[in-house]
Image 1 (cartoon, rainbow, N blue to C red):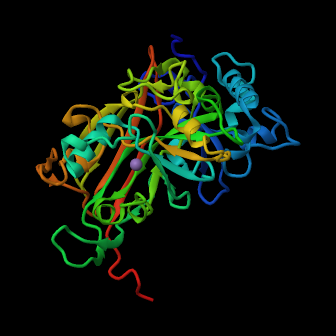
Image 2 (tube, rainbow, N blue to C red):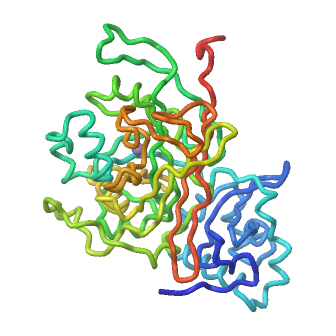
Image 3 (cartoon, rainbow, N blue to C red):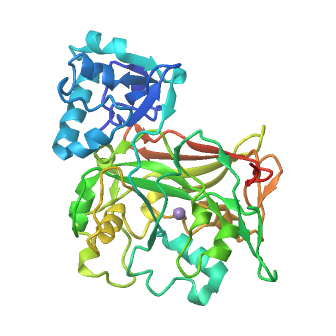
Length: 419
Ligand code: MN
């Protein structure tokens, strides 16, 4: 395994940084009222790539890829351009680079920047590919006997979500209203959600568009990179609405992503195989290479004004289906996939209680409250709670981090139909 790549940006060489030269994740930033532009995280700095392009240090001035406030243009340019861009960035920032003096004026302290959506989400699909999550939820809803649906071991189950409500880390999340009906209620009522929840997921971003069915290997090659993803979920709305077509308004309020796209190339040294199959997969879903990644994940909850409790820790290598398998399956019908499509992995839970990636599982449907470090308890999220997802792939002397994926719960409106 490659060790730390040394940079002349000193903070990028620290073992503590999430953004060594090995990472170079892509985001969109602004300073003050200035325009949004593409930037790359390196140590405690952000490199203004749009300015590098204007200065002729990267890409082509005639075909700008980094100016429009998002990474979609580079994503659409294909794997050869991705690799060339990344190699050039690495050269510019490597310790001893002759270009240091030209590049240095375009670095800004990360603390003074505002981070924005790193790309325009074309469409969003959410999967349900965590074996332990599916078993836990199935056990709660249908009993242990029928925990896994019959199709689960054969299909990466998913639903088409909403691109319009995908937001970047730091965006406030308003508690939704919706139709609620408990098992003993005669009629549904319209009220604020009382069982608002998180889902710890990884999001895969499609770079190269496709038409018609593609293989798992082709799907993997089409993936540009990954972000952390919190699929906010209104469990009480979901319980009443989800049959027979799956979740709808329960998942439509918001989906938060982390601000930096970690490229597939940066994650190469961390590839892991999917687990042994309990039932053989159809040929089109079989993997010949390892397409999961060893990424440590955690969920922190901080009550309003209080300290953060680390509620769960797990790893992306616990998934049953990889993003490549999900993307390949997505195309089997002939469904075209576009640059900027976002695929949620499904909630990532391990087998142990402290590895569960949702409060639904951590509190076992609200029956076993979670005690926070400050002594408070939670079954579901309360107003003012800040949820932070973190992810890190640990290399030999360096860490590939994603940046925080955070959101604070804002109280429900008093009357959502007030005009
Ligand atoms: Mn989900």
